[in-house]
Image 1 (tube, rainbow, N blue to C red):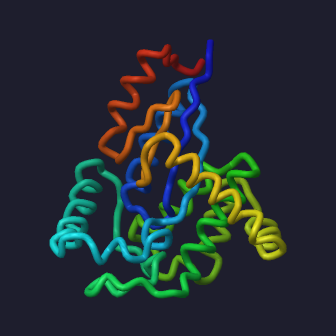
Image 2 (cartoon, rainbow, N blue to C red; image 1 turned 90 degrees about the vertical axis):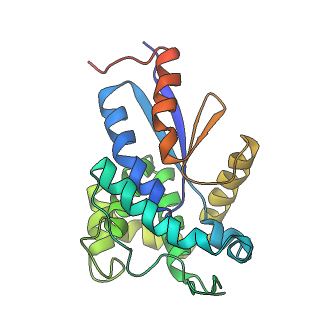
Image 3 (cartoon, one colour; image 1 turned 60 degrees about the horizontal axis):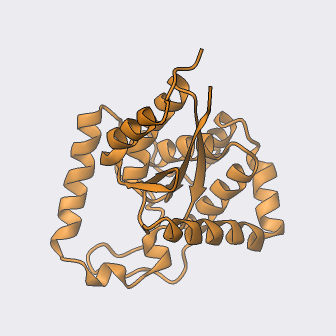
Length: 218
């Protein structure tokens, strides 16, 4: 029996990344599949001018579609507060200082390095997007989410503070690998070098896994 491997490129600002994680979780619990989280920076952090080029109708459709998708999937969902990206949603302008997304993405990289990356992004994404918490960055919310992923927030935070460049290098390598497989967006799931972009490609991903010997866990 062969364990099938998926690389999961995820942005900690992407609601669609959050919305696909429950299905990926169930997939890995049910079948002999290993999921490696590869955190990348949100497009707003990588290319601040991107939002200036899109149609003004994009935002209203995006807000409607994320809510609709969550309702369709039966996944709890709410607007994140604060937004992981500091941005003026009316103008699309991205602030030069981005403390939230950098901290979150480095945290995900540290969790991935320790072998619990998918669990960490699952728990932290739920904290940000499931609508139950305002101020996910306050108090012990992050610490408790990281603990649910069987990691120690204080240890991760100390490691990141001591050498942030190390974790930025992991993120940069993930971004290079993401481009190498032929895409730039998130969520991006990659199996055998084949990219599946978007939460709505999950069923197609599972179909491809079944073609390659997907087997149930015993």
